[in-house]
Image 1: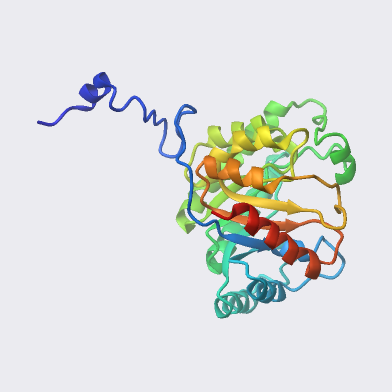
Image 2: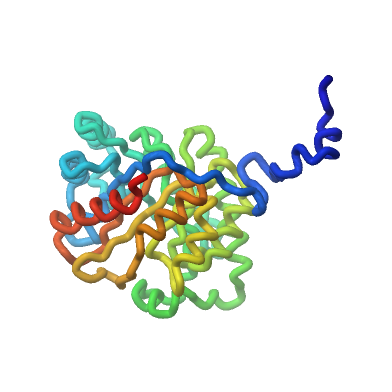
Length: 311
């Protein structure tokens, strides 16, 4: 005898599932603790902090293989070219060294009153989705953007990541623009098979509730969350706990030699437990943002993360 869905609901058989959408579960759903090995990658940014001379991505891939990373996250602005010859060489170098290219980290800003400016950033995002697809990266990093009423990035950080909206507008306007812009990119991401992972990267996503507002209102399996361990003001752990159930990628900051912008004291064993308890199974990508030489600090950072995430 088969039971109808109504019968099952009456008996409570489905009550515990509480599925809301195809990619979002009710907050009451208990995650399954992850015990599988966590793959650890390194961002090319770890070797280049927007210095005048770019550190070659090919060399990062070779370093990653020699040191013992599982993959490499490519910072789009660090790429020397978008020509096929260059992209093909990155793929060849990665394959020859047994390294996965798992993430393309891009920059864009959807917080513009001018629709034409927002369209520029939508088009840029779509172009980067295509680049990721060509490289074999299954996901890209996405930003919400910010008002830029504090032009200096450092001064914006000093203000707690909060900015005053442009005259005549509110943060609600900015959230609306951001959500609409991401929704315009969703069909392109789905067509390419590339997930967009929204990061807690200042601006509208400085506060966890702002990030979750965008994520839940877009409500698509092609929008995920990229959790950056260093981009929090105040106690990071309570905020990590709120994001961890939704995270598919984690960027793990280290600050050997003192941070380029700031320094955070982070307990990675505690962070690893929070992520595992939330069922996290994705890549952890090292972003070494310290002033110590990368050739010294990156291997130390890998050991720190391997120890913390050991099963």
